[in-house]
Length: 62
Image (cartoon, rainbow, N blue to C red; front, side, top):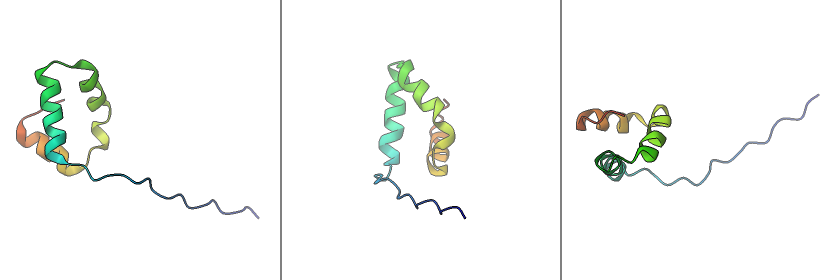
């Protein structure tokens, strides 16, 4: 019989400050920082619902 896999602990992640995150995206768009914008685009599907809703409310599209 196979041995059960060990339970992995979640990493100690800090909570996301939504306002600061949106400000970072605004600054990247203002300065036309394509590297940062590409990183945000690639990880957009992993954003929490609240962040996606806030981005839509602000009128920011990635």
